[in-house]
Length: 253
Image 1 (cartoon, rainbow, N blue to C red):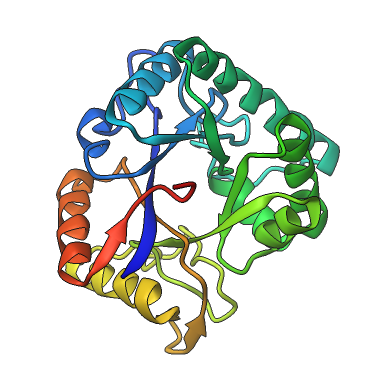
Image 2: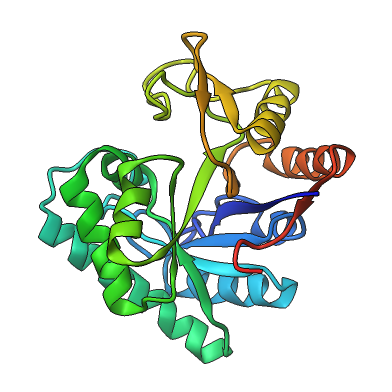
């Protein structure tokens, strides 16, 4: 039987703004990436999300992003590797406090949005992120885009890494995600998204938007918790995984 982790970005509400259906989504995922207050989230949301995930037995990871609340961390910023190191270290530390208070271990770190995509291509940036994670806790797992510079940086740093694929995103010929600036960056048809991710998990391949088959490794699958039909899709993907003899479990299990 094929095994894969199913992760979701959570804890992205802020103040009076409610984003996502965290409590409901947690019934279907095995790993939660919790926003650490820079691109989204705040102390109260972090605490509540940690508690919810811990109660469901879902493994928890830090989801550090760029300091860009207005842009939801999805706009590129000209940061240095040293700044990336500091941003990631700071945000891991913030979430670690809440985890310690609940008696829960952190499983992984997954950079968010633009920081994630920048690091997927930029070796100096990805090395700084991996070094920050290793310095904080060398037992943490680095989640990065399958086959990217971010995963390679984690391996160079001595971290355990998880190659991540996306159920609802289209891919470029070089294995990177299509920019959200393009209309076809997100897959709107659930059937298409499910078929894509099952093929990635079982065959290790994905068809790029240009029509090329790309080889990749799928250790963990990301579903987005902030879309309008996130809960419906989470239910569907779990059901289709079961039909396809794919076992869902946390990467660290």
